[in-house]
Each structure stands twice: as C-alpha cells, then as structure tokens.
Image (cartoon, rainbow, N blue to C red; front, side, top):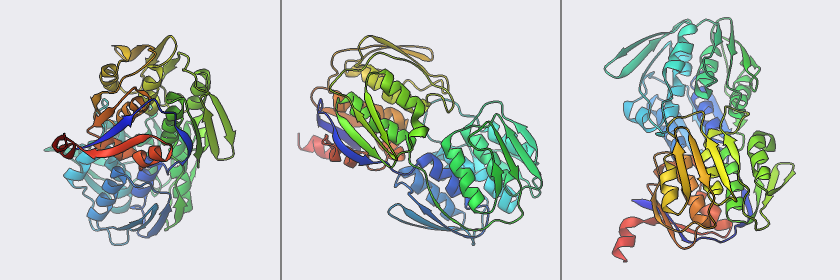
Length: 427
C-alpha cells in the first residue's frame, strides 16, 4: 500500500507551480470523441488515474488512444461495441458520460451502475430521464442498463437539479439528434463551456453553455478536431489553500481567475492577499492565521463542493469559529474525523460542520476517505501540522491530482510517496 508522508510540517511553501488541465473537462471531452468516427488531438490532458480509466473505456469500445505526456491522440473510426465493461464502470463514475455519445453513434448502449467517490448519492436516474426525453428507451436487468435510441429527437428539457453530468450527457446525446434541444436549469460550470467549445469545433451547433439555458441544434455529421483543455480550477483552489494553510507565498501559472471567483472571495475574506495578472494568481499569506468564515456550497458559480474539504482543513487553524455547510452531497464530511485526529476541533451536525479554530495541528497517521478532495485536505493539514504526518489509501488522491507530491516538493515541502510495507521493514 502506498502513502504520502510529510516528514516535517509547519514549513511555508514558496515558489511557483503550473496548474494542469482540468480532469472534469477532459473526461466528457474524451467521451465526446465517440460521437463521430474520426481522429482527435487533445492537449493539456492531465496524467491521472481517472484519465487512464477513460482511456481504457475507449479502447474497450474499439478506439485507439495514444497519450504522450499531456497530449492525447484518439481514433474512434473503428469502434465496434456499445457496451462499457462492468469492471471499468465500477472504477469511475464518469464512465456514464458515454451513454449520450453511444446512443448518438450506435443507437444503443449498455452500462452498469458506475463507481467513483463515496460522497453520497448522485442519481443515474437524472441521466436516464434526460436521455428518455430525447427519445431513448431503457431496460434494467441483472444490474445492467440497456438503452436504445436509433432516432433521437430534440426536445425541451427542464432539469430537476443543475447536475453537471446530466447536462453534459444530454448535450452529447442531442449533438446529433434531429431538431432542436433546449436544456433549462442547466449546470453552468466552466467545464460545460469547454465541452460546448469542443463540440462546436467538431461542427456541432450549441450556444448558452455557462448560463442556465443551453440550445443545441442537432447535426447529422460532425468531424474530428483539435482542442486544448481548460486549466483545473479545483487544483488551482487546492494550491491557493496550500499557500494559505502553510503561511507561505505561491504563484500559480496557467489559471483562469474568473473560474475561481467564489474561492478567491473566501480566501480574501479569510485575510490573505491575492494578486491577479493575466493567467497567473499569487497568494501571499504574510504569515497570518486565517479569519473564521461562514461557507455554504452551491452549484457554480457558488462555492464549489470540491473545495469544501480543503477549506475545512484551513479553517481548523482559523481565529474563531467557522461554519461550513455542504448543500450538494450529503455524505461529504468523512474527512472531519481524520482532521480531529490531528487536533482539529470539528463538530458535524447533519450537513454542517462547526469548526473551532486551534493554534496548531499535530502530525498523525491518517486514512484518506474514498474521496479524492478529502485526501487532498489531509495532505494540506499535514503540511501545516507540527511533526510528521502519513496519509494512507491515496488511490483517490491520484485520481484527481497530477503529480501532487512532485509539485509540493517543488514548493519546498518535505513530502514523499512511500510504500508502507518497506517503511515497516525499515522500522
């Protein structure tokens, strides 16, 4: 088993770091290549476990995928299957994004219930309901869901909740459907804008991404294309917290500050100095402890649920008492118990965490919950804690952060990946 060891915390991080391409933008874009038999070239694709699973899904469907560093070439001309293997569905929830493209390409799809982070229910029913409104039919049997839709037709669809994955799946299914589709109460995340830009570069006709109403005019034929993925706003937010929690100074390269407005607002409210210049963002903590905050997670452009764990770690060291309310997922507070092992004072009441700031955290042996942002939060806490911290079960961290340990080392952290069996042998 691998772990991440911080050999000495309480060390201010300093320097600059380049933010990788967005995982949450890359995954639906990779799924979109199924829509049209063609060749695609993608840039700024992060090297992550989730990307490897998505690559494996494409290959299982008959596609050819070659990744060299952060560049990827995908050839979907010889796809010969519309069934996603069960073992790949179980490894990553984003596999469900192939439903819309496979229906659009083959008029059929077969999937099982997806896996991924254990942070609460994220109903596949929303995806099915949306695709049904485009004319697809579904049948569930023995844990598998089979869909048919040889002639999808545009429709006006109102989402019960602005789900990112559901919005993307409907966009993907509607791109080649007959007629016009309107998605109301659509998710507004930047990753959806990036998917629209990619699809339009294929020849699709989509407008409105980034607002709550997206209009799609179906096209019979699309084409291959080239595309550069947007920077990862959650990775950028995580490094802003790394600078704040260690009371250091970090310059982030390759960021889009507009995508981070709610996070930036809370960082400033906590008392930290931020400087924006083009595609760079610099945090200077001036060696100060954070102010207490009241944070509520909401769909974009509200405060992102994917930054809630990292801010919980930061607010553990704040002056005063903070309240952090999770409005998106009902089971996303598991990291609180591990932070308490490090000396944090946190009381969870339903969807809210009441955090009484302490002057210091202490290094400990902690276990990352099965959620990648929670694991990152524990690493951040370890960077700020006195002494040595070991975070185990880091597989989920590696699902969402490209070379996290290497980038932190670049900023001066005394951190490394360890093999626990070898550590035990060496005493």
